[in-house]
Length: 171
Image 1 (cartoon, helix red, strand yellow):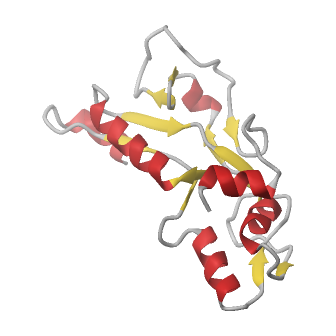
Image 2 (tube, helix red, strand yellow):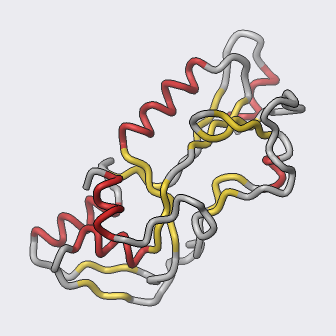
């Protein structure tokens, strides 16, 4: 909706950021799990092999600030982020607290997250923070391959060591 709004205004500039789960933000699953661990309740995770993107709160803020600096309107900014299985994520928080794997995905919940799909990759350019998706034809420099997908299960920055994930996210 916001990305398409840029065609209706010559004055207002519209930009959108897209990222995964922000560790340390209100409502983050990490905060929910931490609260459960402190209350000595069993932590719950849906499917151990499902994967998610994780971003420290400072990186999320930096991306929003970067979006305010980008020229043009109708742009989508997507950062690079670490990802992990949900089992690794819950182990990073549990630290000895009991946890239960329910094996049930929520209605409409995806097994893996995808932040950049091929239809957008055709209009994307690589940037130091990740990718910038243009509303129409992007500049040639730094263009992403049309078939590129950025997904949590195939992410080159996927972490499956709970200690490293805890450290990278500042948990």
